[in-house]
Amino acid sequence: MSPNLLARAVSIYLALVVGNWLATALIGTRQTSECEARVVVEIVNGCGLKGAAEEVATWLGGLGFDVLFVGNADDFEYEETIIVDRCGDDTKLAALTSVLGTDNVVHQVRISTFVDATVIVGGDFKELATRR
Image (cartoon, rainbow, N blue to C red):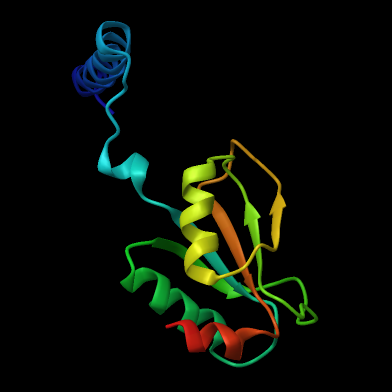
């Protein structure tokens, strides 16, 4: 990256940060960009039914969730769908629990992750299908 491009990127970043800080200081609210408001999820198949994670990912993507990854869980023995909270944002978590209709939440907040939550699709996959 050239020094000029890096300097420009840093100045834009600082302008956004200072702008939000100034808005907070002056009017007590912080502007939320569309990117910050989106819920980024990964969907993993924990039930072993072929295509379960892909189907849930398509469904959530159609509802406006950003699906970053689809794959398999560590095993296929999950009886119920579980949401693993990765960001600690109650608003984002509420949106996901409401849509999936589950209170099965495990909190494993990790700042270094790129997703807000991991959805482990469990054996109740067919029940999830009735909510769509």
